[in-house]
Length: 261
Ligand code: ADP
Ligand code: MG
Image (cartoon, rainbow, N blue to C red; front, side, top):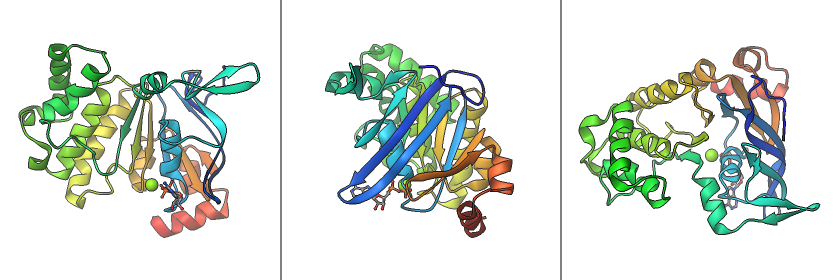
């Protein structure tokens, strides 16, 4: 699959005509999105507009009724068979999912594991690394997120900001092709937001491929190559931050921005 991307790099994620219903409620209504390798995409939009569902479809946590997603040109969760798309085995789906990092609003750390083991567990479980190498990598990643001195602590002993930084280190441990962030700072006390944004900023400037759902419009402007505005399960408009945020073309975008800025 060769898709023209804004920065000319190969597409890391392609979402094609994705529709998703919960019962009679249509939550995604024909989403097309291409994320180029090395690109930082910020997704903004009102509550209930389908942002989390979009990330969950990209990460296989939800299956679209129509449409498909591919990662580095490889279809996610399905393969082509003649004209039909066939389901992949659970094993292949898990392997695909391990190439996508996911950082949740509520951290979702393992409470019974130390910080070090939270980060080291996944590369061992997926067979990527043996335990000593995984622990070495975990030390390196925890140093990168500023937590070199907390490797032996348990999640409950950390602040929310520290827990979210562990969650980011854990996502990085699988060396994912893309990291999806679902409102990574919205569960944090305001004074802890900055330390988490600093870590994401570091990833953004070091060439990682990131998709960030956020209400931090100022941060989105600063780090994103592209802003995607979603409303009612559709991408209403997308483009460079200064265009979408300062000169939005669609009245819905203007109205949303007037409420949040
Ligand atoms: P956002 O992240 O933009 O706030 P979501 O993707 O979480 O939006 O949700 C979009 C819509 O889908 C909302 O109306 C929400 O209530 C509904 N929804 C989300 N998850 C489920 C689910 N598991 N079952 C039924 N409805 C859901
Ligand atoms: Mg959400």
